[in-house]
Length: 528
Image (cartoon, rainbow, N blue to C red; front, side, top):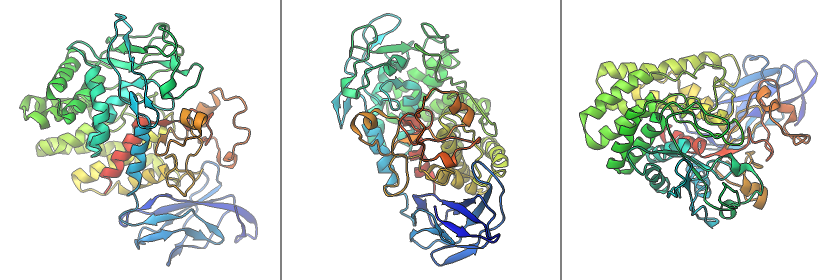
């Protein structure tokens, strides 16, 4: 970084952080200038000039931070924010600023395909065997969940439904058959294909998986049925039912046009209220989802839209008022996948189909969560109000999506800036100056050494994958990485607030996830 004279005649390093993809003309546009020393003066973007404004105080690795507001500048083109001798990375302003991003996100989803992968060919054709009965069941297809090879139906069910809503029907149709397969009869739904035995050596790509689930290396993998009770051979999850998975899967099948399967899944969810969680085998780690009213609301409203059966609408309204707002919003922490998928899309889907009284309540469920986050966000210069727990990018994207949907539903623009600044965090306006979307933008500084087997084994960059993102330092410190971070290029930007490493070793901050990728695709689609 360049060193320059400041008002106090001291010398300081300074950094300007921006959304490296860019901004739509009507977007709020706020860069962050950070330094070790106090600064003053003007900044510029093209022919736009303004004062850097008041010192926002210390946060994270920086003692002094300034919010550079160039919202009024909307001329289409490529620009850099400049202050003295310091420049930001290049970014775009224009109606087409995000035109290339959805294709990159879908490129990652295609790389994750299981069963028939466009890059490696066929894989996991023997998925799988029922862990209760021992019988073979066909649960092939779908997507590998992250940088490894197992498949979580908790995330897959969401991805199918959200892909349909994001107008990505081709990719949604790739995952939809698996949702039908995991529900082979009225009483059964599978929550997970494979488990953490996947993480044992040897490390291979999808088509050459040699993991052993008790039936020989490379043989059939475990298909775990959601039983509605705690599950796991050694460590137990805290499952209480199946309604979260069944309701979300019902929404996916209704959107796919398979109404009979959707009805059956929805009926299973009503029969077995409670939550299904992923199944731990070698370690105690699992996806501990705790909510299901939102998922049953989603299943009910998609069935109503598809069938016009008023009973589904009545159910959706009842579930909406049980789900209400998102409890995680405004909190400092929450459990791993505790409130997945973090934004209640069913409220948005239900809103046009109810009367004014219910509309007001549904909008308020969105607004109260946004307001709780806003009150946290105003305390730091990046206006980040979401928890920095594992998979923090999911929370950030959910906030931005909820802000966009709230504005779409009500016309109230109160939270547009809050949502925009959350989106901008994902694309590089963060203390590390890194886009958390692998390889996006192509010529910017984005995640480039992700925790993904294609990168480790073939040096093939899984472009378009959204990585987990920064975590609180105590979370990162509590994991076992050895000396993997001795050559950390971002050491200057780590702090007690948060840690991020663009290194394969850091599975807590730099592993790409399918649900986060699909969520960002939906955000781009709804952000207007």
